[in-house]
Length: 401
Image (cartoon, rainbow, N blue to C red; front, side, top):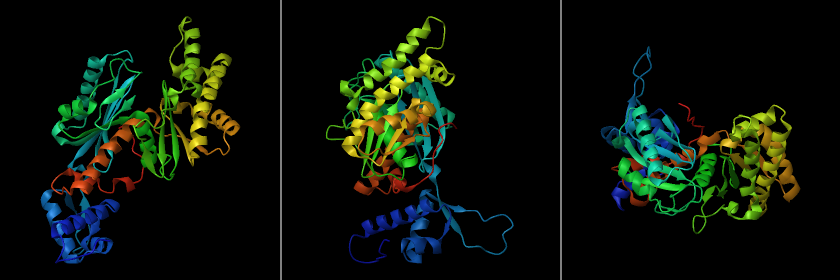
C-alpha cells in the first residue's frame, strides 16, 4: 500500500509511487472501477482519479466500454493497455533462430523461426538473425519503432554488456557483440544472456518451476547445458559462468551426444533419417540398438545432473530443450539414475516449452530490463513503467501462434 500524502517530502517521487501502485493494480485485475483501484492501492479517490486521468492522456490506460444491454449508468471501468508497446525475445541457436513478439503483459502475438546450420560463420548467422527479426515484425504488423526492448539468448558465455566471451559450439561466434548488433537493428535496448540460463528463467516465470525456489534446469538437446534458480532468482555466478558443468569431461555431457551420433552414423548408410529425433522414434518403435543408445545417453546425462543436485540440493530438476519432447523415454531412466547417485532425489519435471523455452526466457529478460529502468531511474515518461510487477503474472505463453 502506498501512503496518500499531499504535502511534504518529494512530491514527484510520491507521484511516481502512486502511479506504479495503480498500474500494478490494473495489471493484477484487468478491469476495475475507481473505487476498486482506490481500495486496492490505498490512495484516496481523488488521487486515484488524478493518476488515472494522466495515464489515459498518455495512452497507457483505456476506458472499458460497458457491456451491451446493461441498464442504468454503471461505474466506469479501466484497463491497462498492454498493447501500447512490445518486446522481442530471440533464441540464436545452432540449428534455428526463433524470434518472439509479445506485448507488455508477456502475451505472445507472433513468432518467426528460421532454420540455420551449425557450420554458419559469424556474418551468415547475423544475417539470418536479421531476417528472423524482420519476418517476426512483419508477421505481427509492426515495425522496429514499436519495440521497447529486446532480450536475446545464445550459446556460450556472455558478459554483462551482451558480448559473447566464449563459444565453442558456433564458428566465429566468440567476440560477437550481440547487444550492439540488436540495438542497431531495432533501435531499442538489447539484453543478451546464455541460453541455458534463460531457459531456467522461463521455467521459473511461467513454466513447471514457477512455484519452486531452488531449481536445476537441464537443457537437453544436440548440446547439453544447465541453468540454476537459487532462492527464486536466476543464478549467474561471479563471471556469468554458473552451471557450466559440461566443461568438465567427467560430467559425461560431451559423451552423451556421442552416443546419439553413433546410432546416426550406423543408420546413415541405410538411408534412414539421421536426426536425433529419429533415434527416439526408433526406440519407441522397439529398435533395440536405438533403445540401448538412449539408455546410454541418459546415463551420461545423469552424471552431470547428479553433481548439480548434490551441490545445490534443489527442490526441482527440470528437463527442457528439444529432447524434452522425448520425456517418455528420458524421465523414468533419469530418475532412476539420480536415485543411484543422490542423497536426496528432487522432484523431476519435464518442461512444457520444448525448444521454445529459451526464447520465452529471452522475452522475460527484456521485460525485466524495463522494470529495472523504472525502479532505478524512476522514468515515468517511457515504456519502462509497465514492466513493474511482470514477475508476478502467471499462466503459460504459447509460442505457436
